[in-house]
Length: 166
Image (tube, rainbow, N blue to C red; front, top):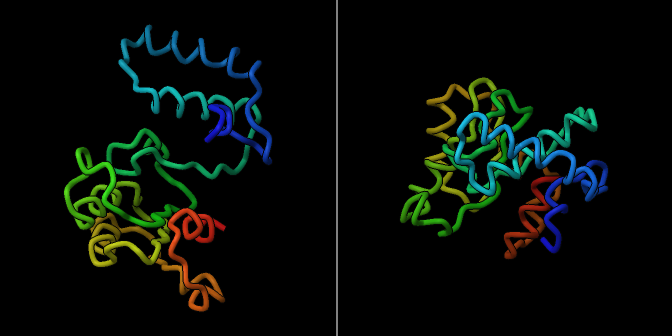
């Protein structure tokens, strides 16, 4: 990310500086009024929601922060699809020390009755258990939805994540 504004786009166009100046004070005022000690990511998420509402966006691809049970994006209760692309040993201080513990936390974005797509470099058993416990919709992996996925040898997680998101 080379600009804060890259985090919020509609049809490839970033939120304008004017929109940030217009909407961000409203978020800060609301947090102050409600005595909410919001984090940077929570404020950014609220700004994104305000931006998408202002633009009357009908479909949003919303990326999580840490991507877990306590993520600010979990206010979305009925996403069209939840995607967990890959799991590595990052954010271990918050999410856990093993890929399995991290997967259990990241499974917090799986919603009841909603489908989930899980990348190949994830503890599948852990996430399938999360999906069952939450009575999620269908559980997919890339091989089921991408025709040529097996033919691709992907070692770069960013490339893999982009491919799964498409």
